[in-house]
Length: 236
Figure: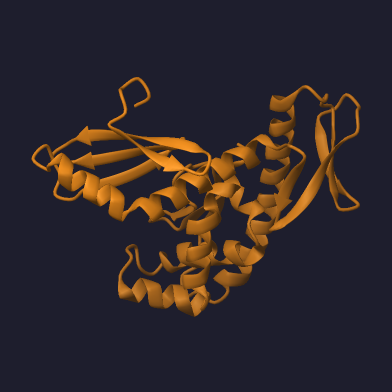
């Protein structure tokens, strides 16, 4: 969209956010925010006057999300720390030749990476988080699955960018490794959500009842992911 002229601009505390208009056959007006830009999607018959009215009505919501995305982008560029199970760990480079990482005194010590090797640092931290995720997810899956009639047939890590988890018809639970940065309760919620799919491969009321049986506070956990899920993409 950046190669197309902006249809409008939205004043922000830190500069302006361009608004791009996309005409497409659809019943409702869609608003998408990405990379600090606003995309307005509407049917060709919707007047520009009405679109500006919608933009004005949604202004506070749009500004909140644009500023949130910019904050996440700044955080992603900061490689001084990593979040592990909801708690920040300072990243400490220790020299050495072998690329590895280990917990030590409230910090994650990374070896085999130089100060200028940002890509190398991200890769080492990502690999470490994946190892921790496989161990932690396996333990929590076993604990929660003990409450289920149908047991999962396996566990796998996912690198999806739009889903936190999935459950196949064969019973394999896949969890996004980036969840290792979330508080433990959030991980339990996603596991409970996927385990509920062992009985209900949909999102019917029965599915949500099963999710609630496994994890009663699921509504707050789901809200947390909607608000803070973007923060978990600093690595990978």
